[in-house]
Length: 121
Image (cartoon, rainbow, N blue to C red; front, top):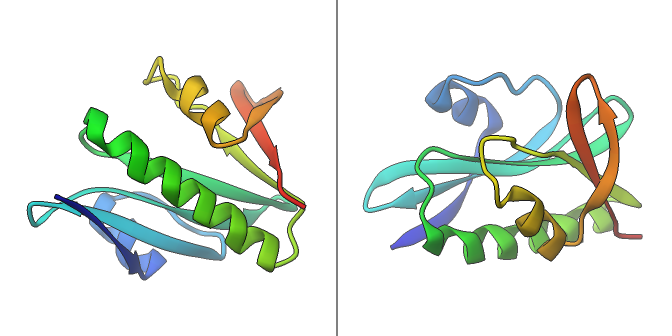
């Protein structure tokens, strides 16, 4: 069963071999004692960003990811943000659908990436 836990962003970066070099709030997903992904809020380039990184995609992860996205939006609003941004992961065909369910709309193409924005404030 998937459980989601608060995590130190540095520990997440080390565990997943990724770079988290902006101020961030991070969470990890654990399923059957295995790390299956991470997500959180990060601040950089004068924006608040949300990210999710799934190591092994399963259909049953969609709802917990959606619920966490909503929690991240509430947290960003509490911190005074009016918008939250994310980059579409081209690896997953269904990512635009999930982003739309989370309240994101296409914003722009920046540096070759599709950027989506959610108005929260």
